Image (tube, rainbow, N blue to C red; front, side):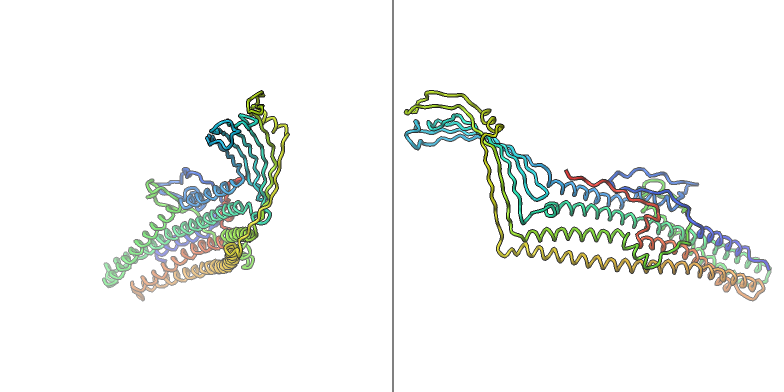
Length: 544
């Protein structure tokens, strides 16, 4: 007996669907995504055919990396961390300081020898210094000081007198705050934070790719589920047409028309739900791709063009776990965070030491001005002109030198504050290590579950395909019985429902496998590599 045309039509459509889903995926061009904070540029226009947006999976990934707003938000964190490194490097910036003073005093004469009842003095001075922190924790400074002094006292040999001094000072901690590790603690932590921001960006890109793939294959599934529902409606309508002909010729009771009409209504409801699912899947993909909701593309139909692959080899579980522990960015981020805590703990251990500082100064001095010679009565009998240049000449000639060396000591009795901070920091390091091991265990568990999920999804495809083949044969047999009067429309509709469910399971199994594969690659930390995506970072700020 000839097979029902509706059945042939539905089976052909399902076979075409399966062939499309089971074909291999075309290779993609490598994609580079930068961590730099750059304005979102106009993406390459998607292909539009008959008013519908056509996208391969590779094109969807590229659009999301270029336009996704969540990714742009993470770039701001990256930029802020980069500025944090610049800020930390500022400890090595040179500091220029200076001052200018003018002083005028009048005081009663302290001696009759002063020659005046009121002693008048005028002072002026300016200082200029340049200092910088050294990696050892020392502070080096060069200071240049100058002054002018004038008085009406008879005891002044130089009046006005000019002074100048050039001093080199070094203040070096010997215990607390000594060493590069302590000095550059903030720089190391800032650089670690920059690395954490990079790893966070990598993780965000990975999560975005997984979400885009999930959304893409969910849309593929929703569209094919709609086709399955439409094929089921075709079967129900053809059965209804057959019933109408047989009722008209009097070989079938009119009640059978009611049964087939109920079948049509039920399948029309399924189509409504399937179209609703397609719309939701399209909106989710539009959101991940960062499509402008004001643009005309937001309302356009999205047609996915990529085909799902189901023949992907899996790593052995133990190798997969090792790969994940090596490649997962969130685990690397935890390790860098622990390193920052270790740096902080080492710094706080140093702070429990006594303060013992070496201070050394070496300098050159000079004095100049008008020299006044007086007799025994205090009268000026000779003068020799001079000025500030005399003081400068003495400094440049290194005629008068001086040095100072000293050691300062300080230690709080008990030192409870520093000891408590050190203990808390060491506990934080231990806590971070425990959290790291906890994450390693969680990753291993996730990988094992992901491997099982892919294996189960692959088996589900074969089971669903076998179920579909049996459902097709069952419908053929039931159709023959119905044509021979040995079955009813209700029974045929039930068998059609079974076939529709079997076809739906095939579609769901294939797309479910693809989503499970995406989760597997994310669990291993290889999703970027498999998607041919490379994250490119900026150069790290250099020390001045």
